[in-house]
Length: 346
Image (cartoon, rainbow, N blue to C red; front, side, top):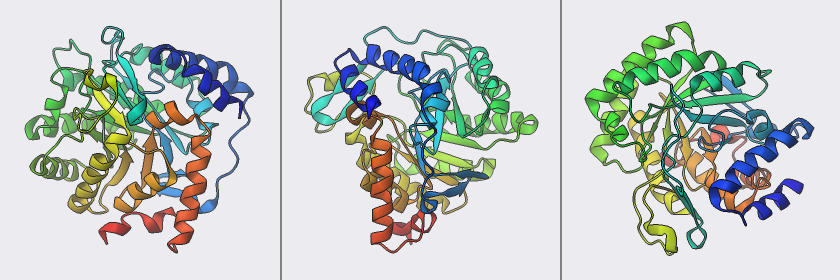
C-alpha cells in the first residue's frame, strides 16, 4: 500500500515533523482515496445510539484540529476521534515534546494540548458532509482561570458537529488537569457539561487515566453512573516507566504504546465490574493487533481505539487488525463483536 510505504519514509523524520507531514499527506491524498471497503457485518457494533461499521477507532491526538477526519475514515477505521480541542488556540509545550521509543514500541509525548482552538475546529467540521462517525475530544486551556467553564464552552461550540464528545481530564501534560478526576471536581464538571447538552443531544464520554487506584476508579464509576453520561474511555497515557529499554524513556510526559497495554486493560476490566453494561466502555492503550483489540473487547470494551501503533506499523495495520479480530471471533464461536464484549467478565 502506498500509504504504508510513505509511513516508512516518514519514520526517518523527527517525530513531530513526521506527524505534521502525515497530516499534510492525508489532506492532499484524502480526496483521491477511495472509500474503505465495506466491513464484514460481524464487526458492526451498535453503541452510544450510533451504528459503527467496525469497532476500531482512531484515538484523539492524531488529528487535533479536525483537519483530516474523512481521510482517516477511508483508512478503514470504524470511527475517528479528533482533538484535544480547547476554547482558545494554544501552542502547547516547548519542542521537542514527542519521542519514539523503538525498543519498547512506545511513544512519550508532552504536547500540552497544542491546537488551533474551538472556533477553527468548528469551522472545519461545519464543512463536513457528516459521513462516518467522528467524535470530538475537548479539554481546558493551560492558563484558564475556570477549567470547568472551558469544558462547557467547548462542548456548546463543538457538540453540534460531533457524533459524540469526549471530556478529557486525564492528560498528564497540563498541570493540575488530572485533579478533575477527584470526586467533587468530577461531579461538578459532569453536571456542568450535561447541563450544556440540553441544546445538543450527543453522547458524552469521559476519558480517564490509567494511574488510578481502586478507590478512585470506584468513585469515578459512581459519579459517571449518577451523571447520566454514556461512556468512559479507558485510558489515557501513563506516567509509569516500568521496564522500559529505550534511551528516551526518561523523558517527561505521557507514555503510550505497548507498555501501556496491560495496565489500561486491567483498568478497563475493573471498570467493567463496577459499571456492568450501564455505560459504554472504549478500550485504548497499546492496541497493535487483532489479539490486543480482542482482549479489550473481552474485558468489556464495545469499541477500541489506537494511535501509537500506527507510528510503527503504518495505516495497513487497521485492515490487519480487523482480519485478525474476525478470525478470533470465529475461533471462539462468537457470531459478532457484540457477543464477545465482556466475555471475560461473565
